[in-house]
Length: 247
Image (cartoon, rainbow, N blue to C red; front, side, top):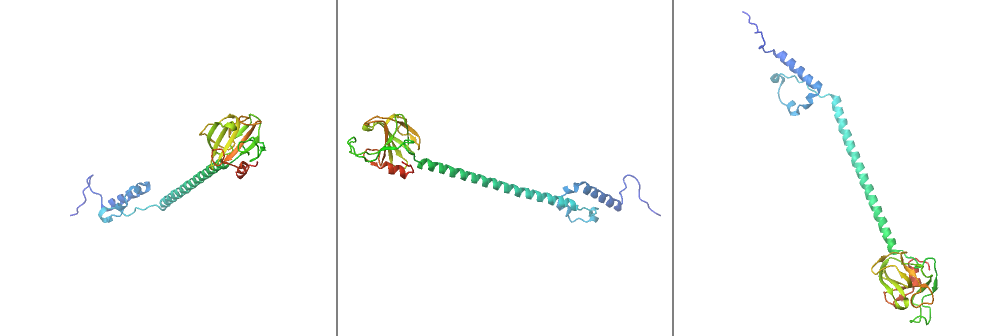
């Protein structure tokens, strides 16, 4: 007597049908890209097709692998280019900073070392150590620059004003301590335009020439000294020339 399989909705499909259906499902997953979400360890599990009913039909398309490699290479190149550009920007900023510092140092050097004549476009009318009874020492302790009353008087270099006001025979005077430790004095002024403690630079107006004090006419009396006091004078012509001033 022959037996036949029972029919109806509860009948299990044959092993061949289950295997075919599962293989078809995996193929569909591969086509849609969903297979990319499966973890590698799951694919590497030691489960045979006989135990699971799955056929080993999963594979990664070569074109997809090539696209992934190309994307990784592009990202690497972009990162390298960004690093190169950043390094170039930092180098340029460093060069600009160094150039700015050099310019500042040069400007400061010029500010400290530049000297000018106390009266522009003038000449020495009375020389240093000229003999005369007009001076209490018997000789001239400075030089006189020809200048009409009201002519601009300049600081000859960078320094700090240490004395202003009446100076007896010098009339209205200014004494400046220079950057190099020497002193310069400006006498017979009609007007004083600076105060004690003020810093001045070469060429800055500090007053106006005149005829105050012991004079026979308007002019500027200029001295170079080793101290702020009378009697410490040195040759003002040699002093100015040593600082690059042609007098």
